[in-house]
Length: 267
Length: 258
Image 1 (cartoon, one colour):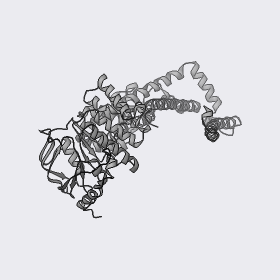
Image 2 (cartoon, chains in turn yellow, orange; image 1 turned 90 degrees about the horizontal axis):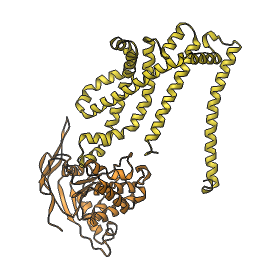
Image 3 (tube, chains in turn yellow, cyan; image 1 turned 90 degrees about the vertical axis):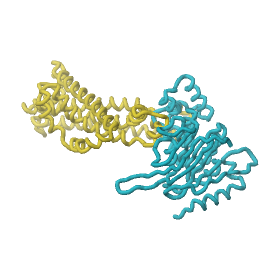
Image 4 (tube, chains in turn brown, red; image 1 turned 45 degrees about the vertical axis):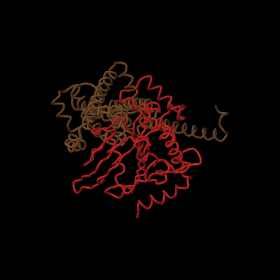
């Protein structure tokens, strides 16, 4: 393919590729150097490992937890709760947003309630939810739902409302029913907002799950963090946080892949 | 010209209400549109030109007066009317073919036969190679052409054009207006076109209706008769000797003061 382009073009492409590569290399270096400095500082006792732990200790602990299956159990439970909270929170939020789009009256009635709910830190509701729904998976999942659902409703409703009036008019001149307008125009036009809402909801669902697990649970990453803190084993806490970061990054990446699949129609 | 009336507007008035005031947008307007003609509507901005189109299509009900299309009073949005907007209003997530057939889909008329018709029509209008492309890959002029095909595929009795070229740059606008004009004449379509471009109105229309400032009343209806040396096309018509007389006359009627 290279002989299709001019010399100048090749130089241009090369330059961009090289820049990309050096960004990636630097990103990885920052991580490695950070970990190395942390380890060295711990080895030479410049820092108190009782408070900071060290990469090698965390790694050893990780291998231990992997071997006895403890880790997979905790991770599995938290991931299950997060995915359940994420799916139900998103779906319920979208359904409610559609209903609000359908009925202008109820959209206006519920507007102040949504505004208050949106500004309220939903984690404050967690104790009530857990008492009402019950400790265990259910309470934690509902906590996760409560956090993502309000943002979903508000974002999606905004997006449904912002669809060009003339496009609706166009479908009406074809004789479209309200349901057809929804299905052929409003929903597909809101896919970009839906993707960005999904990205936000991944993070929010994790917040709900971790808070829920802090409050009531006998397993899960949130429980592991609290337990580690209580017995002053900071390497457990640190390991949990590393794993948490890793998993949410993977989930975020999955949504990005979905985004690329859905968006062959834009640049 | 065929004597058959396709649209009859009788004593149309339109009031707009807000909490603090009401505005009379259209006042006692009478207008007939005949089969096969292209009627241009010009008027000062904000005079209710677009409202008039919405009233004809049944999208909004006039405060007073009777609208008849094909002799039938208009009660609900009409399906046999093609509406074209200022923006092409293509759906970004549908490729060109799927954009063209969206109206067929809505009306439950999409089948193998109509799909083939849509493909043929896209090819006929020179967009064959873009059938599977997405709107962002097309130029503004091509997009407006897709919008026209989307309208024509439903074989509407009447086309309502609401400043259909005003979102395009000047050169594209001239070219597309020319093309659309030729297509409308060739297909013997009846069309009502709202525009603020006087030259465009003269070059495309058989009659030009001049509206007054709000509340809109008809100031004048001008029959456009141009002498051609050549084939009839909106672009050529600008060379006709009568063109500038019409232009001056409409300009004076509009009575624009800035």
